[in-house]
Length: 166
Image 1 (tube, rainbow, N blue to C red):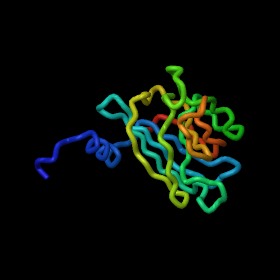
Image 2 (tube, one colour; image 1 turned 45 degrees about the horizontal axis):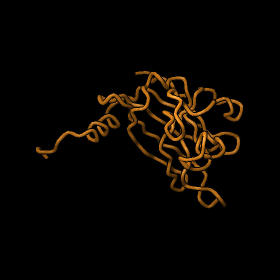
Image 3 (cartoon, helix red, strand yellow; image 1 turned 90 degrees about the vertical axis):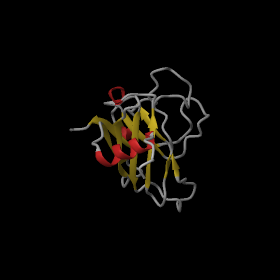
């Protein structure tokens, strides 16, 4: 395909396949869902934004009454996943915006039989701004309207964002 134009998507695919992420968060489930595990990766891009990919295993299954295959995922203020994730603070929100315009409001995870994978691009934060913060997965989907944080339910998994060893 000699005439194929280079687009941001081509660049993002190349980054995902060939580059080490600038930062990562190993996400682990808490007391209620200890089987959850996965990795959220953060890549620098030439577009002044961040490419994020997430691969999460063992999310609560749809066969559980009242569960959903959609799960809220946010960057929280603090990188402290202790005390049943109660020390993570609020959504990362340096511009003091209403929900869902917090810099830490991410796309929801779509779990399929307990597995979720996704990648997306975001220009609301830099890698340096999120180092030491946490990625939190919530038990329900974010409704993107309720204040202050989208009514996404209990925190079921958490991981601290750390700079990668390049």
